[in-house]
Image (cartoon, rainbow, N blue to C red):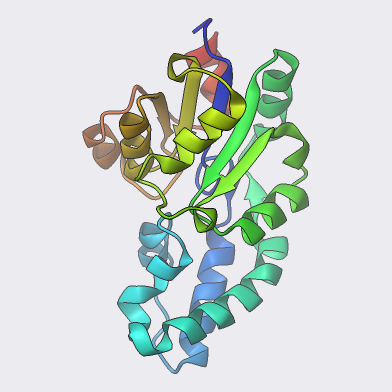
Length: 214
C-alpha cells in the first residue's frame, strides 16, 4: 500500500489493553451505588461507545451523572495501575514514524483519559493528532472523528488507513470512505467483525506493517 500517508488508530482494544482498569472502575461505581457488580465479559462487551453509554443500561438517568463522576475519579488512578500496551506496539509505532507515516488516534474514550493512557504508556510522542468523541457532536460509528483528523492532516482519503478493533470502527471507516483494518484483540468476536466487512482483519496490531503496509 504505497500510497498511504496517514494511519489513524483506535485506542482501547487496538493499541491498549485497559479492560482490567475499566472493569475495576465500573464495579467500584456499582458498589458505591448499591448495585450488583457485573462480570468482566459483560463490561468488555459494552466498551467502545464512551463511558456514558457504558453506564446508561445499569444506573438509570437519575444516577448517570453521579455514576460518571465516581467512575472518572476512580478511573484516573486505575488506568495507571491496570493498563498496558499490546505486545510490540511501541516498536510498531517507532517503525511507522521512521518510515514517514503521519499517525493519529481517534477514540470514543474522553480526551482526559486518552491522554492519561498515551502519556503513561509513553507513546504520546508518536502521534501528530489525537481526537476524542467528547470534542465532537457525534462519536463513532459516525465518521466525523475520522473526517476531522483527515482534514487536519491535509491528506486525501485514499491515502488514509484506519485501524480499530470493533464493528463500530469498521462502520466508521466505511462511512468515512477509508480503508479499515480490524484487529481481533478487542470486544467483538471474529464473526461480528467479519459482518462489519472491513478491508482486512489481522490478529493483533503488531502485524499491521507486515500484513497490510509492506
